[in-house]
Image 1 (tube, one colour):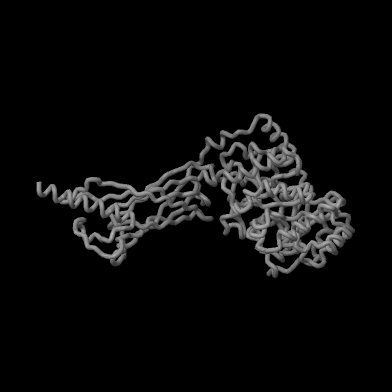
Image 2 (cartoon, one colour):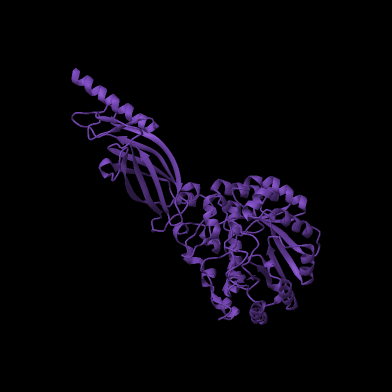
Length: 528
């Protein structure tokens, strides 16, 4: 009886000490292999347990933005002849949430009482940003003997490296909610697009005329600055390329768009526009509005300006946060107010939706209507350039769906004409949130001349998909004989696109959503 009573006291002592340790109140350290031998000191004996690893698909491609939750920790003392704990195993909640990085990497460091066996339970939840993959779980076990270093109350540290391989969730992809009527429409639209692709007639030509900008937007894909390391392209170089294009196109059917950077930073922009106008090309520009004074607008109109797009991203605080300029909202609003009084120009407003402005959409809509905006385009922000470093710019799957629901409702109201941008395929939302089914015409009817002379598709494509250069190549020769990656998208049938039965309509989403290796950074349809 005496021996039993002794063991009970020692067991109870260990249990209470351990529980207090988890709560951070213990001031005792175990000493040696005997849990009954306790030395009291200031502080709680702890050990550091690090879990690091990588998330990939079955083909070994890294998966970013995968949610990983360290849900709880299990612990135990190994039973000994002289010490048998009443509860060999216990658990402690952790609730640490992290996300895999650009290369699929993740790391978490936990501190716990130095017990013989520690097991951390990881829950892998792709559904937050990539529902194409099945949820998974993992237990990572640490043994006391693996601890290294340590001094005093710090009993050392140990690291476990793990690899998480996610399995495609094929059932979810196949179980889409696209109606038969919409599928028929998609099929007809696809056939029409095949004909357009075969002809690949140039209809829109972007000219990245400068990388200088008077803003430093958080989401800038080209990292534009007030003083750019890349000088503006001389207008003579662009016009020479344009003159080589002219004999092979109908200028009235090719729209030239000046983009940047901020095009209005060029003092000769009116001269550039007038030169295009003399060649009978309609032209327009994309601007943040800061430099669009009444005098500047008049000069642009005299130079033949046909259309203009102004960026305005939400209420003042949200817009100025994104654009990082205290006067940006006010001056962009002034520019829009001027345009609302012009009858001979086509114009619209574009907004980039993020976590800072998503909840303001209804009020912002009313503000735009009051300003006289008739055409409104909504974009989300893809993780490239500066945007890849700012988590607040990315929407969760539920937030993304909320944006689409807002657009659909606004279109039904009919008070302002709003379109979701041509970012990617939207499944059941197709033809409900924009005027047509999804299409990416980069390299098909849309081309661009970049600041360095590079010939490519849409200028939003910042990865290495250049097809030539005007300083070495003839633009139309490149346009007619290259652009294979843009016009034949079978190469995109990989990763999460490999087994998707809607690939025929989507073809891997917009080219701008693929990184330099060809990996799809985000799929809009899989987020719905």
